[in-house]
Image 1 (cartoon, rainbow, N blue to C red):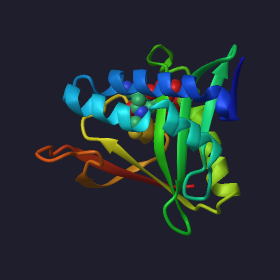
Image 2 (image 1 turned 60 degrees about the vertical axis):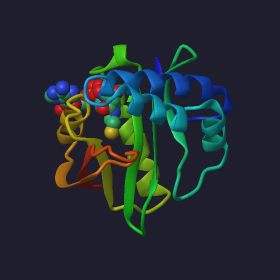
Image 3 (image 1 turned 90 degrees about the vertical axis):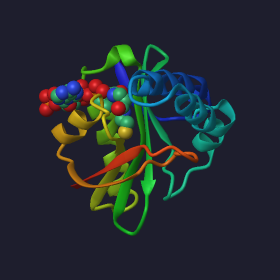
Length: 169
Ligand SMILES: CC(C)(COP(=O)(O)OP(=O)(O)OC[C@H]1O[C@@H](n2cnc3c(N)ncnc32)[C@H](O)[C@@H]1OP(=O)(O)O)[C@@H](O)C(=O)NCCC(=O)NCCS
């Protein structure tokens, strides 16, 4: 049985693995190896995730995880960017577990948190231009394209583009 729960320290290694594996599977063909390695190292190291499951707030609601037989198979996290706008900051699955409805369960749990705890009325997400493993999912869940912007995580000389998507919740 798959359970969605708020992550704690026992899930840190699983979150790191799912996000790192998911990140490689998503970006291998659309980003440089250097970009991928740099971002995985920055965001999905154990020390950072340990802090991110213990120190949560309105701006960072913590990780929510999908767990099956004690194994983390997906993770989501987000926060509020103003009074009414929630943001999906991170959403990854074990790459072998896509298209089973797990992403929808995770997004639902994050949306419930943002609406009930933080009074969100809208939700935003940045998706990499060209990410065909993410964009159709968000569109199927009612997000609409708003604008393009420079990708967060670009270093000097990189010009990757992120697409901003929005929905009312
Ligand atoms: C995005 C992701 C988390 C979605 O989770 P998932 O469990 O695979 O998605 P679900 O099974 O819940 O599918 C939800 C919907 O998306 C649709 N969908 C998913 N991928 C699709 C695709 N490639 N083309 C068309 N529709 C697609 C499904 O049809 C489904 O819609 P429906 O229920 O109305 O039929 C997952 O696919 C993933 O890890 N992708 C790679 C990582 C990524 O891009 N993360 C987002 C970074 S911002």
